[in-house]
Length: 376
View (cartoon, one colour):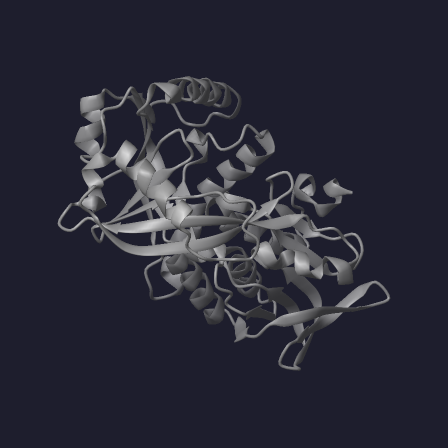
């Protein structure tokens, strides 16, 4: 008998499990390691203060708290387990290379100023306009820019490393993990009692958290609740830049929805596609690879000689309104959701997991605006 079972071991589920285990909650995490899990193919950009992804204030406030929590969690994980967390601070450049990007650049600048006035973020002095030459001095492969804004307070996270650190630290606190496929969430008289797996095993618990990413919708019929989360395929390519000192390069974001994230090992992650009609098919496509590499050559032609090291494909759990789905469901007592983060799961996931764990532990948390009941 467990106190809590977490279904799904991506960065969100791992965070819920870690935070519960740290509170001495007897916790079991069950994960089937699906191909195409979003955590394994995310960019890892942490910079909500400059994001042009959405105008939603609900998303922005959550993202600010999530970004602010990362350093605290990173420090804690560093103390509680032996591996690298994959989290680090870095600079971010937002660039308009083509004339068509300038209006969106200016609109984002206006949004940043309005958010700064309302929320105090980004903090004064952390954003600076750069000339084209100044921008290229920071990211040598960059094309000449029409406009560029630098943000000094961004961060990046290797999601696979951070998730592994969460699980190692969770196990230090007593977390149990198994690799199985949960087929049913069992409940009686409107109260959850546990889960069944494809191997024929049953596990009992008074709390179950569905953190199944794009696959979370599989439980909606048995739970009697709509979980409008669908897969959005993202293809991201990792380039080997040979002897380039990519560790010192900033993150690069242009205004056609793509980005470049440098890493210390001469590697740059570039992407990503946002395919809403992909279904559950985590495969590389000619069209997707062409889209990503075409944008690389447009924005950073200096990367033309880089080698294609790896192509990753992730199915992002995109909710109907592009906001996370968090907290208890109304139909079965003891069942909670932690899904629907879309393309911002790495940015929001660890903090979302903490909020769900806090709620389960009886703390007062303000996540009603992310409740699944909003879709009724």
